[in-house]
Amino acid sequence: MPGNTSTPDWWRGAAIYQVYLRSFADGNGDGTGDLAGLRSRLPYLADLGVNAIWLNPWYPSPMADGGYDVADYRSIEPVFGTLAEAEKLIEEAHDLGIRTIVDVVPNHASDQHAWFQEALAAGPGSEARERFWFRPGVGDGPPNGWQSIFGGPAWTQVPDGEWYLHLFAPEQPDFNWNNPVVREEFLEVLRFWFDRGVDGVRIDSAAVLVKDLDSVEESYTDHDGVHEIYREWRRVSDSYGGRILIGEVWLPDQERFANYLRPDELHTAFNFDFLSSAWEPAALRASIDLTLATHVPIGAPATWVLSNHDVARPVTRYGRAVTSWDNAERRDGMPSDLELGRRRARAAALLAMALPGSVYVYQGEELGLNEVEDIPEELIDDPMWERSGHTVRGRDGCRVPLPWSGTEPPFGYSTGEPWLPQPAGWRDLTVEAQEADLGSMLCLYRSALRLRRELLGDGTLTWLPYGDEVIAFRRDSGLVCLVNLGAEPAALPESGSVLLASGPLDGDLLPSDTAVWIMEAR
Ligand code: GLC
Image (tube, rainbow, N blue to C red; front, side, top):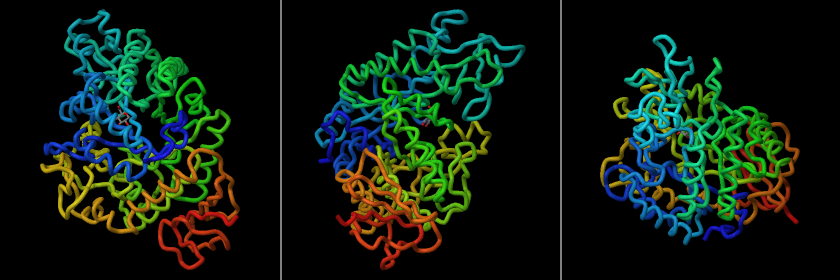
């Protein structure tokens, strides 16, 4: 059973596995992943050795944005299952020592949410409209020139002439967080899920809730007023005895980022700076230093994230000529040397798992899946595709259903046709194939997560001098992590025993793009 789940600060050093439910495992053969599928695969997650799962939104949703368009925050999407099944999942996961974190989406709802339907019907000037951002237009156009994050205007007009704000798709109207009714509603939503045993929430688009509509500039990111909201949320989570709050906070300014992690606000936030870093020693070292410098003074643990459901898979990213990540560019279809990318992704995993704090593993990362870049256009589901006028393919390539077993699609994922097609080449990457191969990515993740539980997690690190090309540090347990990002092999330390390596070592040399964990001789 995975360790440290009984301690109140389990989250500080946790390994958290992100379940994109739609694509994890399908229990009823309709091609879409569901709770039955996930429950049947919980032993796999226990074997992997994770402390918690975070599930992307599982609420009733028209799926205009993969479930981030929530129609009802207190129920389960019928395609995924029922509330009773969700409660069973939480309980069964607990029995295996795994905590459950759910996604809460406070910035916007679905246009099918009862409040939005009520607002449409109630008309201009109504209280129902005050829960969202409805405004008259200027001339024939929208109230201001703000653009949606998915492309196109951030305003859509309704038949009575008013416009409503949506930072994302038109099917995702933004809530008006100046309205106390909205604030109270979300405190109730938190209580609803904490009452059902969830151990934490991941807060979607956490930095954009508060807006200044009078500003000509787009003015919604990181307003000071957002912190008051999270102080209220923290009071609720604390009243449940340490349920945790995790923010999706994309901010370039680390000081502003740290504000979200003050002791009376969120517990942790995703480290997108590390995820976005190029596979280059100076960039990675700088990102790690910056991360620790941001977190240590406020006493919050860092998080280490290599992938999620919004970004290209690391295997593909690290095999490209440009290895950094930029949401604005995405680099769809840029050629990638997948063999090189996979070698680097293995090394990156050992790096991320050796660093102090908690670590996230996005489903399929442990299998070394590549980004799927040839999904037929007519099957593309991501709203970015339509909103960009068919110029940005979007995020489906990292959301393709997992390959579990067998030699051809659907690879044990479903008995039906997966909602997105799986590449035939994934036959070598199934869980079944990798379990039988001690050198596989899956076996590497299992070993690393096991060792990490015993020897790593939260704490501090000490940098070791190994030259510019090798990232090297020691953890308090005596574990030394070396990552060679140079083109030439690097010398391994003369003493100490090798616990784990991301690839074959060359005698006493550490090859290029390889990481190793060594226990110091004592
Ligand atoms: C977050 C989610 C992303 C979603 C967006 C709008 O960035 O991670 O998947 O599209 O919010 O809810």
